[in-house]
Length: 229
Ligand code: IYR
Image (tube, rainbow, N blue to C red; front, side, top):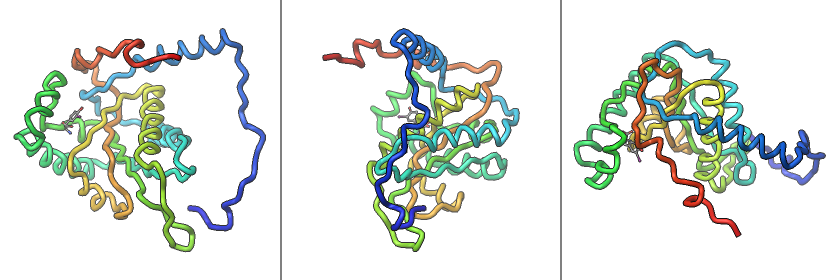
């Protein structure tokens, strides 16, 4: 992506400078919270198609995230092909079966009980899109030599947060899914070994009868997640 000679410090006037008054700021902050608190992790999808263009815009949003040294160490693979989704589901369910049959350890499996999850992952074929997030352990200059990436998990985590927020903003629901191990995704999706699969995000509209686990809606109050000095 980069060529060595382009790496120099230059500046631009801050584009898109916003200058809201304090009350306007508070209104915006409240409106965003109001929107984001209506995001729910949904396991019951409607299979109706969602246009490629919507998914593209949401991934474009993810690509605006800040990252270590601005290396943008991520790649998103968007899949609507039913055969590939089926192969992902088969491989993921095989791993999940081992996890839920004891491989995950008693404490972990118990912690998941209130969420009602199990080894069946129908959403991986029902949801019209799967987005697989890859983290790039290193990058390559145009001449093929490698450069290091920095803060890769943090950067990819931030970009994935942007993605989930953008999907919600577009009226879609999403479910993150992390079969372990996920190496099969490199082969299936033809991604290089420099990339580590981080998660699969099932994306679509919610089924009209969708349910969510009651416990998922209990969020820690502000005074438990924030300290002010
Ligand atoms: N990967 C498994 C288990 C799982 C783990 C966590 I941490 C969750 O929050 C939910 C599920 C699965 O997807 O079922």
